[in-house]
Length: 240
Image 1 (cartoon, one colour):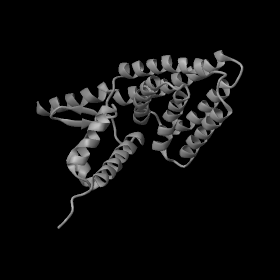
Image 2 (cartoon, one colour; image 1 turned 135 degrees about the vertical axis):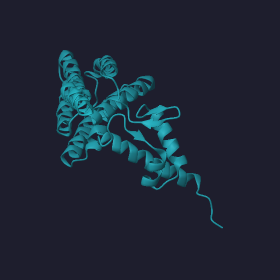
Image 3 (cartoon, helix red, strand yellow; image 1 turned 180 degrees about the vertical axis):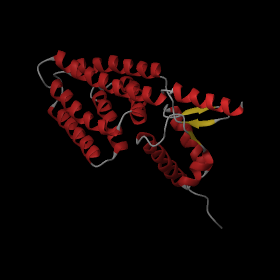
């Protein structure tokens, strides 16, 4: 008699499916508004629709997917205003982080940050875009952990999760090389002698991220009205 799968086996399957969808999102392979169908994902990942349903629900809770009643799960298609709002929140929170950490990093903490930046650089050089995007976001989460506030950490994790997705959807792959350099400058400023410089480095980094993401989103959402209505006009002429 065939034994039912163990709870541990179910969890492993779900974690594998979760990682696969996250990697697809962070690699930029899934475009804004793409529907994620349970049956297709279950077949592609070799698991049950029930496991996929749990994974999609989890990703919806994390705001990595949009769940619509009776329609299913979709890759987010955020408005430019929504994205600007998230980056605005990050600037406010991370300005406070810099003020709290400036001049207070231990040698071990500084070494941990530098090792993280090295991992970011390796991911970029090896062409692992999803890892590069994830590690870039985790640099800021690592800073938040050093403040030792669970409430702050949870809030920043949510903001970073959103902006990781924006970067994957709208930023170009070659710009992943910028993050390690910018993060290294933030570390240097945090252990330097100017709080003003440290704040400026952190905010300039977020400003540049936002600029690139908004430019990418605007380009993707732009409609060529001339081409659109030229086709309509051609169809009308043909019907006449």
